Amino acid sequence: MMPGMTAQPATRVILEIGTKRVFACAADWPGWCRSGRGEEQALAALADYLPRYAPVARLAGVELPPAAADALAVVERLPGTAVTDFGAPDEIAECDHDPLTGQDAARIAAIAEASWAAFDDIAAAAPARLRKGPRGGGRDRDQIIEHVIGAEAAFARKIGVRHRKPAIGDKAAIAAMRAAIAGALGQASDGTAPLPGGWPARYAARRIVWHVLDHAWEIEDKSDA
Image (cartoon, helix red, strand yellow):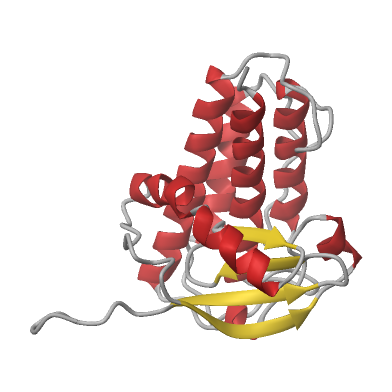
């Protein structure tokens, strides 16, 4: 290290370990989550996706350090579930219960809003029929959009937000639901879930943003000729 330079803090990572799949999730960067067959593969996939995730963070007004993938520090290992093996991060970590200051809450809400903007831009530029293959199965663009909207309506209930699933073309209803989700995520909290059986805000942001971006990148990948 050159004189006068300070060390880049390690990126905290949560590992969720299933029997068939491992998820690596950046604890402080909602949605920067990737999976692999084992721990090393999941961490490598997480590092590989830094260039795709960084523009989303930048859109949210928070700069992700260019070297963020150079030092990944595993801070928690969680046993996975059938959902983990199916392909989604499913477990709430201890650090997901850390208190949220107003500044921290505003930051994760901004990242959620940026993920929706990225998703909408990618979907708008994509063809209606997507290339078929193992990446995401055989769904076309509008089927994926409808799935994402429906999942958001379900996820929202975990943080006390109740909206009917908007129709795919109802932009006003979609915007209202997302604004309500962002409003809930943007509230300072002591780290507890807002209702029994619900999700603490840190985990909710991680799960919601991961789902949005995973499908945004699926659409992007399957739009290639």
